[in-house]
Length: 429
Image (cartoon, rainbow, N blue to C red):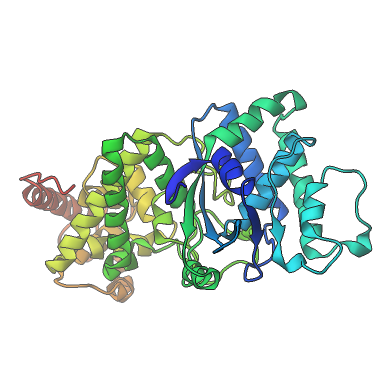
């Protein structure tokens, strides 16, 4: 029996759902996915199939083996398994794919399992017999059908698409020995959602050579430590991404925002994927080498920043806070994406050079001349002299030195500081 390994959907179907009596226990919530989420999964799989992707990862599935019985409980993964069953039913309506039952259906005539098994039938239930879960099954099935038709799916593609799903779609299988309630609590205590960084991590592990897998796991562990354990680092880089309230539905969840129930590592990947502002799952354009290069560079920069702060060097911290004050649309990792081969200080200097006002550049200089963690209040305190700067050439009306020339002078000093700091070019990876 496979455990804690990436396995194909074919293994999940044949070795577990067809072999055991699998059911969803009462402790599990109802089926919650909305039509947009279900349709997006189907169309994303279709896009991966058309692009001939070798692997597509769907996160973790957790099963509990019932003692002294040939039964298993689906503890985590209900939303994906129900949606995939409906997708397979649409692709091959006459085939017997896999099945599972719902413990909450015991003792009632109109069971969820019955509806899912016959969802392609034209003999629908009467509206009065349809409760919330069943209505959602029907809505999502129709959304899957409509979404695939809109992206060019035809019946002739059914066999190839079906084979892609069962052979190329992978999940991380976890078979637990914990009692279901304990496992459910463990999974849901401070639970973070499965986000784009989790999907990328799974693909990197699958696509890597055997000797590289351990290094990738350590890379993600190191990135987690930098974003979760280094509070000043997280305080700095999260600016502009954070949303305090969790949206009522996934349909209203922005891909480039971080919500309280999400993994912080989402910030590393969210801006480089997705077809629109709400497409938080697609990894189209994913490339193993490109992704690994980004993540390694992020680690190098975050580690250098963390080391600076431990040594009471707040220069980069103060500079980025100053920069963000002038450009609230700026995002830390988006800024790095455009300058991946640069040191953080070089990126910050480049960003300040692009600012149009001499006053803003003067504030950057000010941010670098003070020791310690600097509040951005000094910018507001200096607003009274902002009008003294000529925004065309940096001349200051009542000052001896030209503002633009002052920045150029400081730039030379700053570049020497960067050169001296990194002269040994020590590899921090």
